[in-house]
Length: 100
Image (tube, rainbow, N blue to C red; front, side, top):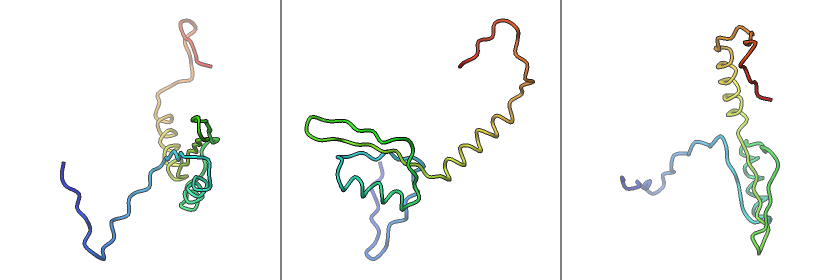
């Protein structure tokens, strides 16, 4: 492993690329809500419902957030892959099991 290089005094570290998906977890308190609010202000959107559990002492919550642009990119990739499938729309009469 190479040692971490610290920026010189007065220099900022390069901005880290935002993750497309984040799962934010923590105690169900104001700090957790502030973390979610900060993610929303940074361009993330809520993904799914929050989850909560009890660890014997306090309620622990989790909320997934995603970047809309990442979803659009993934959706476009799926659409392109589907378009590239070589399928004539006919299924064989026997031996084919579809998924519901």
